Amino acid sequence: MAYEIVWELGFSHCAATGAALLMLIENALITQSRLMLLESVLIFFNLLAVLSYLKFSNSQKHRPFSPRWWFWLVLTGVACSCAVGIKYVGVFTYLLVLGVAAVHAWHLIGDQTLSNVRVLCHLLARAAALVALPVLVYLLFFYAHLLLLYRSGPHDQVMSSAFQASLEGGLARVTQGQPLEVAFGSQVTLKNVFGQPVPCWLHSHQSTYPMIYENGRGSSHQQQVTCYPFKDVNNWWIVKDPGRHQLVVNNPPRPVRHGDVVQLVHGMTTRLLNTHDVAAPLSPHAQEVSCYIDYNISMPPQNLWRLDIVNRESDTDVWKTILSEVRFVHVNTSAILKLSGVPLPDWGFRQLEVVGEKLSWGYHESTVWNVEEHRYGRSQEQKERELELHSPTQVDISRNLSFMARFSELQWRMLTVRGDDSEHKYSSTPLDWVMLDTSIAYWLHPRTSAQIHLLGNVVIWASASLATLVYALLFVWYLLRRRRRVCDLPEDRWLRWVLAGALCAGGWAVNYLPFFLMEKTLFLYHYLPALTFQILLLPVVLEHVGDHLCRSQLQRSLFIALVVAWFTSACHVSNMLRPLTYGDRSLSPSELKALRWKDSWDILIRKY
Image (tube, rainbow, N blue to C red):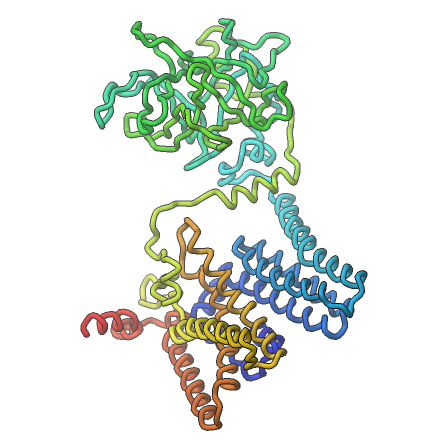
């Protein structure tokens, strides 16, 4: 594909062959592909999208709307959706192709030789193949995914309760057939929708906050309320009507609606959820949340909460199990029950802090909760109720999420759920990639010193970066001279030069620069899609320099000799790094030291 792309851009067979050979001898691409990692497949579809669009664009000049024309246009859209389906970063190449297609479409609109109907047909064809088709193909991927993977798995806790309940097994077995409408007297577990840093449930236990915290601040010494990341009997709460003493559901049940004021009674201790103007243990800007203990001092209970259904359709909506996302607004202080996510010290058993947040502007998932497990309470006596709380729920109603609801949630979770933020020993920054100032140890033989490292060919990486810089300088130079009516290149060659830069230099930029904005752990392999576009640009720049900047035959001969020497050195470095690329033989200490060229170079720089 590298060969075909350079050829379709209008450059020589020699330049196209150079691009193909550089791809073949680049050690990092070899290592990544041999270990079957995602970047290789991503690069494949990135290049396929660019190649298909170039073939479509060249077909446009000869036979528009022919079968060949349609084939390459449709393949462009399919390849773009496949790139995005492999990794979200594939969207950068997709946007690049869309941008080039938009520029070409703009020129089509200005073509006076085409009728209005013809122009409209061109625009509709591009919109259908490059926008509608990729969206449909991407949806099809996840339709098959969700159709085949319908059972609960070990990592589905990052999904919402509604999503988990739609899967066979796991939470579905627990929640199947639960009463749909939460009523006064209902026994519920409340899961935080945010689920960060881990999924957790509103929880309380007999232990109280310490009288004095480590920083010297005092507390209310009330019963602790936390968010606990495990299923536990202490996660159960009873939704109580403030105007009645009973803790059971009436017959018929009286549902809780948006705007109702409720009290939340902890099932195992019968103490009420409370907050007051006392600073939270680890978030002093927020209020402490506790279960109220009457110490017979001047600290009255403040345990009334107004129910706010966030995803309601009307102001009379009923609070529903799993489906409703709710906030609890404290009546006295207007604070909102919120998961701060900060782990408490040992006195709080390392559970997560829950606070009352007054300054909560707009919607945030950390303030939103949903009922996961639910049953209608039947026992008024405490001992009978404790036995009831320990027993599983057994009612029989099923509920399912639509495909689009599950698809949307899955996309959002993939974008927002973050893994371990701790620094990895092989992590790196985007600036390290360009200078090849990092590597990754992929494999080490347990008995010999044979090993595999993700390590690039320094000659190719440095040359590719230099070629990108040279292209940018030449492009600006030609652009300034054209502004002065000095055309160094004929119009067709200028357009070819611009298109090559848009796809190759642009492909490098869109696949590299966004990583400076990403707050995630980054590794060297994230640079490989950008590197492939730089490698495509390298023979393009070399051919341009040889054809247009070398004036005499002597200059061209010297330039060709330099290119041959450069390519020979690239092959030599690739062969030198072969043991670390293939890991097919053991290495002696002296051989390993010889391969650590970077360390030797650093020592030399420091010495002189």
